[in-house]
Image (cartoon, rainbow, N blue to C red; front, side, top):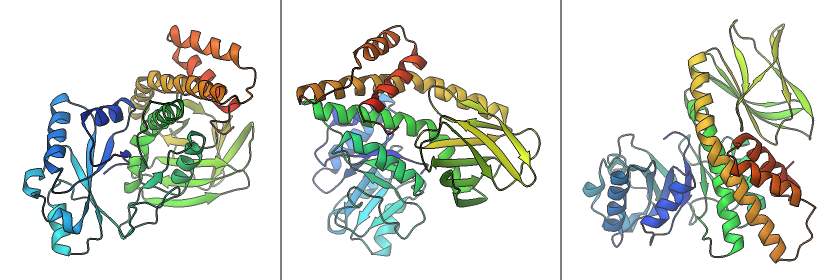
Length: 362
């Protein structure tokens, strides 16, 4: 399964919960299944299939419960992406679960909570693992997502999907939408890491992160600057053939980065790095064009969630009578840009305000 952007839902979920996940650009739901709710879950997968929603189900089971679930009813459903098993060690039962999906994906967890709360989950027996991101505090979501990616996670799962009944829940929900769109932007490239020829953790005085050499000779670099800097130069310890170009994969648009070959190294100049960044070196112009289209398709949603997060956070802080910086003119300008569908400007202004309000790290 290629880099899921998931959320954990309750066993008593309904179709509106799945729809809300779709609306906030999550592509996977994790749902506990047992002998009492399997019919409902099967019905939800059928409904999702009928509506054509782009979301998959990963089902979480315990040994005593799954034995009373008719697996043949769920087998090979197009919306069933895999299983998370808890306290199951019986090889035959795990093999039966694998047989229900085309790719046979099963993740095993030995803890009562399937991921360690508030931190990166311990890597299970297989090579793939996901990060569990708690959403109790919207300002902490960024730190957890960045930590997950820099630790090499193969997917991200948000701990729940908050309700909008109160301002705090509404803010957390819009923060999830904000980060989901960013993860979906990077997903096509992050999903290719499993086929990489080489991968290594990488650290210099300026940055730390990961570098992957993909099977097509492309290079992917995920990095975080060691300290806030206006610009930095990435010194990558290899060279590439002529014809390669370097891009920062980010909103509001991909940015072509200047780079040069110097001996056995490549130097990539990166301006205004964020707390986490993705650099892509490729010579495939068609793939670059598709990535531009992918970013353009997502940008309106990225702006929408950024703007909604700003408004929800500002309203909550006002309700709590917390002192706010003077941002009224910026918020007004942001709303005007959004109203005029100036997605790039609206997105950039919203992110600037979120940093001022300490929702995003600078």
